Amino acid sequence: MASAGLEILGMILAVAGWLGVMVACCLPMWRVAAYVGQNIVITQVVWEGLWMSCVVQSTGQMHCQIYDSMLGLPEDLQAARALTVVSTFIGVVGIALAVAGAKCTNCTSDASNKPRIMLGSGGAFIGAGLLLLVAVCWTANTIILDFHDPLLQETQKREFGNSLYFGWGASCLLILGGAILSCSCPSRGRPASARANYSTVKSMAATGYDKRDYV
Image 1 (cartoon, helix red, strand yellow):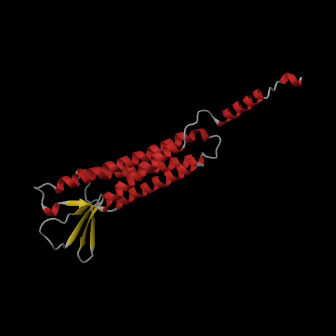
Image 2 (cartoon, helix red, strand yellow):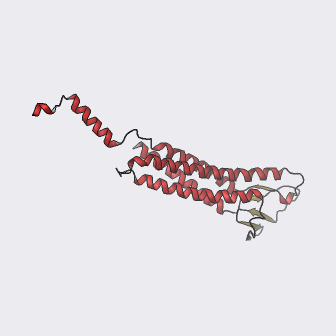
């Protein structure tokens, strides 16, 4: 019962982290215009994401434009796009393995494979979380370096967007959920049938049963 509860908890955390990966990937808020300098009146706010950039006017109007070329993006955004997409697909693999492991709970023929399936599912989620963590930290490090670069114009400096915080939270959920799934189903030393036969022979030997008594 405790193992089933850990599996459910790990699955919930991992799926929530996987949904967070997609939110961080789709939101165009990885880089946000920094409010620095002597310009007090802000007429527009610039958002930069993995797939598009948006400009929000002070009137509330927003105009978004999809990037024309991937090679024209900064290196950190190129790497973040690739790592995030790979993390999403690995999360799908982890979910598929977790569902397959859950189906093996009541299947006596495949019960011996369940620890390996759940271990693979947990490893997939942990890998997805680490990939997303690398993407988010890489982008955050580039933003910090550019912000403190004296040669960069103030209008080109950026701050952390909401997508980075979604990414950090999602990576933590994926790693935690994957770790719980990996530890929820301990390996079995011998199959259940072998343990049953062994216990039967042991009980018969303890009671002094002998076929010659009935001949």
